Image 1 (cartoon, rainbow, N blue to C red):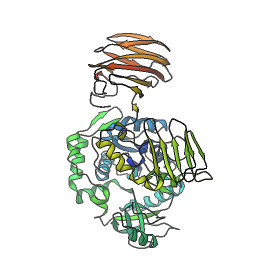
Image 2 (cartoon, helix red, strand yellow; image 1 turned 120 degrees about the vertical axis):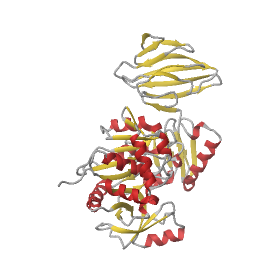
Image 3 (tube, rainbow, N blue to C red; image 1 turned 90 degrees about the vertical axis):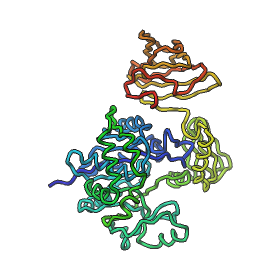
Image 4 (spheres, rainbow, N blue to C red; image 1 turned 135 degrees about the vertical axis):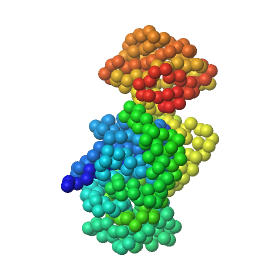
Length: 482
């Protein structure tokens, strides 16, 4: 019998608020290019670093429904066709996500190996990582639940730890039974763990047979399996996605796989991983893992650094100049600028909570909002008007829609636009415009082979995105979805 297929299960949840103002709820860190000089996102890197593994199957991705088109587009950009993209109506931690993956992977009668990965990790030494996966595969084939423990490099108090039943051999890694999981320790205990050869950081990456993890979930937390089974049985196909039954999934316990299974099972084994891993949980962590110049600075975008040392300087739009500064994090986006002392960057999460509580739009979303047909950017706004820049991908189309409270003026600045108004069509080229009166049923399409751009001027008593009545939509969206 040949080797079992290896199915990557990529968990794309999380908001990454510690990397605000870049990472936000509507576009979190896993969808940004944060590591290296290229434009490959963390999600794309998670898939690409698996290339070369034996019997590798198409990935199964699990994400929040709000991010579905981002996930699909980023997979398309790297020529990967997922076996499934499961849409969680609400976050329920890693145990339900793994249960969904195992149920989905075995529904045809197969019993593949599942490689559970987070979409927002950095792993510098990818060849070493693949070698360890192959070593873990042999262990998982015997029915063990393998987790990858990160060899600690410092007495870190921000991670959970795994204690192995015996000292781990880093030079020739082999799996060792797990003695216990430990929550984030205090400084004294973390220092002791660093000196003891049995302790690793808990990475949250796993490898096991789908049937074995399902059996343990059913034994230890049967409610999770029952709810996930019902959510899948009542799912709804939506283009490239599977929408889980909202009510059934809402009843699922909100619990991690560690708590639900790994802390209770006798089947756990740990493999030590020393491959330049980071979960980039803060701007400081990103600075530490990034390539620096001779002054210790990390520079991204339009940045000039003079007489500055040990800073992370990132500009998404405007020119950023650092003069005579040190140990700072400076991040510029289209609507916010973060300036923080490097060792204070963990506190950004608390700041974001304050912004969200105050109802500040900057706490959740960027001015640039992605849609399945392209994106729009809010350029400027007033009390009864706003201006947007809209880019529509080649061949893409917005929904047939109308507005109760606003009118719109469109000016094409690049490409060609096909405009439908109350059943009649007109073709607009660059520098041509049209008017969409209040209540008019309208649709915008890019019939060309290149992106089309236009400027939209909205005016009216209410300009919110929920003033959209969708009549037809090729992306199966209703009036309450993005």
